[in-house]
Image (tube, rainbow over all chains, first blue to last red; front, side, top):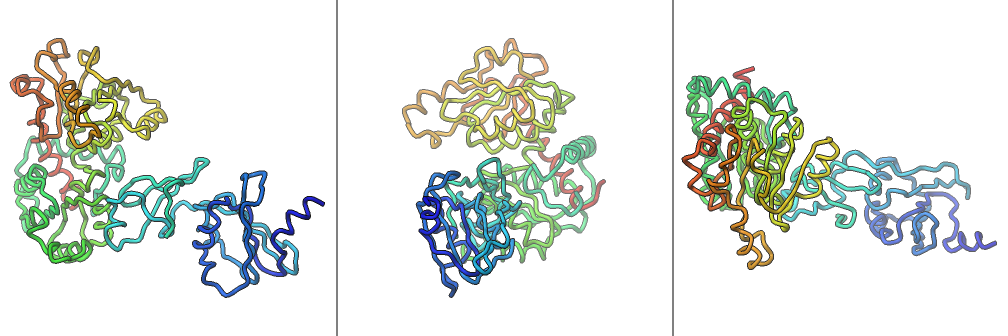
Length: 153
Length: 303
């Protein structure tokens, strides 16, 4: 009964994608990275929901929207443990987990103010390291941008 | 290595580094070789670095090549607001290879991506200066006869020192014992110590010279800069603790050499200059042979 109450906090969708296990403090980052603020589909989200895994989590439900893997992996920086449930006719037909890519372009700003990517129009490019926590090594200035200092573009 | 830019010391494998050293050795025996006849090398110095620029220009001249370029950004179209990309794309048309120094970190890597001729990084801010590292390796191997089983003492600003970090990375490919001597505020960053641990390489750190110098094979000195200290009083208190004087070398090994990337201020006392253990000026000369080797490998003039 209690379990049901939890799931009812954000209403179910007929068809679309549910992104679960987003760290509560990064929910809006995920929305920005996926460009959800610009799509014309019904979206509901909840945040600061209790989570065994994360303490507090966020969840996003997007009707009639399905992501390709490349898009999903873009959120790895903000929500490396996120899980995607693909919903068709109110049922979960597929589950996908985020895979941290080896390299990312754009998405995040290099933390180093003296980096060329912050001085000229050069697209950010990072080598991703993942030893528990995701951090980014700038392809240009070779400085590390850690999770704490990640500023999403 | 042919046609490949040299931006970071990590761009070269251990074997490639050794190849540069072997060829530099040949240039030392026979420095005047007419390999670059009709070739043009650009030296683009967006910030001044007289020593590095002259060393590159000397290397090119000894091989019969021509040098074009500028010595600081005030004499280039950068002052008119031209982007780095435009400068590089233009100059790439005029030359076979670009040597560049730029204050912005990562600028050299970016230049190598937009240029259609190879780029050699002669320093991009606090990031990389790979030819310095190669000439340091050359100097160490030449004076010690090897790069393995050495006690290397690094002194001074180990926190921000670009040359120190690159040399550490390069030497970590060999079996070297490191000794770090620096003020508390300028200690070797953890990422480098972690790298050494992962490689199973011994290091030892302390804040003064006590008990270390006599076993050293190489003492690598660097400047402790005032602007690195948050507290100026702390700087005044510590600056004299990292000065190397001739009397401190009395019981050091006969073969021990003192290296310094130059320019030096006070950290290596001038009374060491007459000692045969002083090597920093020869080290600068080795820079010319090393750069001759790098340029001729990149242009495919030597194998």
